[in-house]
Amino acid sequence: MSVNTSVSSSPEEIQNFIFFELAGTTYGIEATYVQQMDTVERITPVPNALSFVEGVVFSRGQVLPLLNLRVRFGFEKIPYDIRTRSIVVRHQQRTVGLIVDTAREFISLPNNVIQPLPEGISGLSGKYLKGTITLEERVVLVLNVEELLKVEETPIVAAE
Image (cartoon, rainbow, N blue to C red; front, top):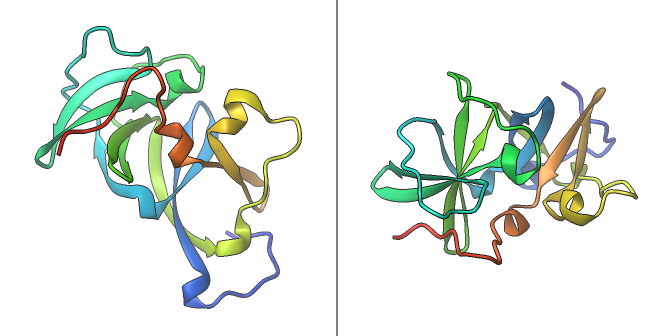
């Protein structure tokens, strides 16, 4: 896999990403936010939760809210299967699981590989995206974790 960049990088200029699939599109999340990846099972529904909050799970000693990224991004909800994953992310005091179709790639790339979003991507679509990465013929949308975890209507913070 080659990256469309001509800059050589030293080890301190490398950034790690987890790539995952959602509705046929590849997304990337900076590995510094990721605590773990799990299969999705035993979700406890939460009454009156926002539509994209699937419920909570008990994982590694803590209760975590699970956000369905398909629903959060306005895609059709589909049944979970053996490929469905929860990517547990942490930013500041928030820890949540992000439900994705599949997650199977860990990749190291130069720090400067993230490009700004193209003009015309705005509103909610652009709000949750930090930029793009182009790998050969594949475009990867990079999540803006800080924005994704903001929920004005109600907090989604795991108890610690």
